[in-house]
Length: 69
Image (cartoon, rainbow, N blue to C red; front, side, top):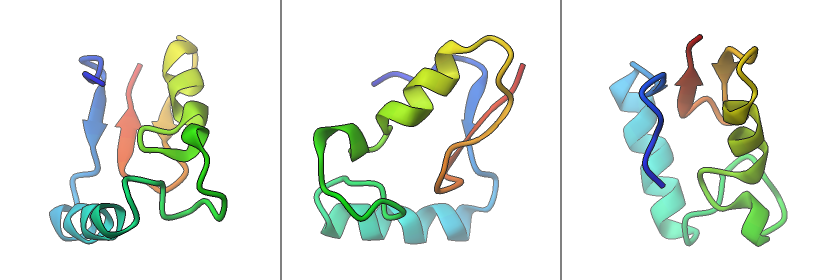
């Protein structure tokens, strides 16, 4: 999925690298979610819904992505 212009990676590159490492090992699933369902593959369904909300500003659940207004 291509990210909208107002969605950025967490600026903490060390954190991002660690999260990506974990996701690579677990098949791309969000490391914060226990269930391995299609809805929990990064970018998870929850954050896709939040991105679609023009009033939402903030991080996704695992803090990998941040959406600005």
